[in-house]
Length: 184
Image 1: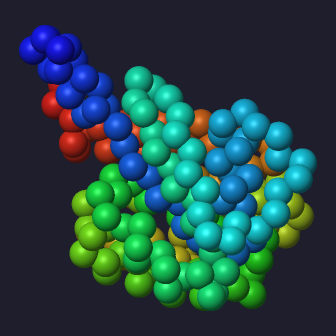
Image 2: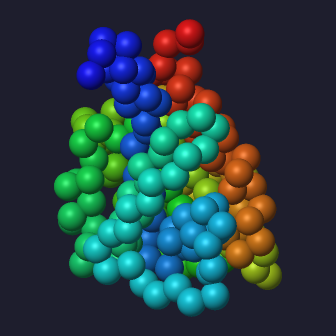
């Protein structure tokens, strides 16, 4: 293998991002991932463990780790923090009774040293459901304005219709790229 081939392979490797998708169970993480990847979303069951999807988007290779959100699995989340470039936090906007637990889990994650450099995308999912809180209300409950340690954005979205999924992922990728990749 010639030097140019090796350098090209290293350059391609640089264009990889590791994204961690977390949130409480039934927030819609797997549905978002499948919809974003153009897969069928008609039959989705709870994630017991994790799913990994590798896909190309915006000139980058995205390694997306979708980890189950059941209470019994949350203690294992820390096993996935290493080398995470972006954290996608998915909120079920229609599940008002669990928003406090959602806020508590997110606050804990943001204190994790191994996630300190990660960009945060909060998807206020299920905006298509009646009674769903809007992103402004979710922002207040999660106290997002108090976050000074991470670049972040909150977007209302629907995993079913696909609304704002592309916009959110594009923002996340652009923010990560501006921090960790040098411009040619």
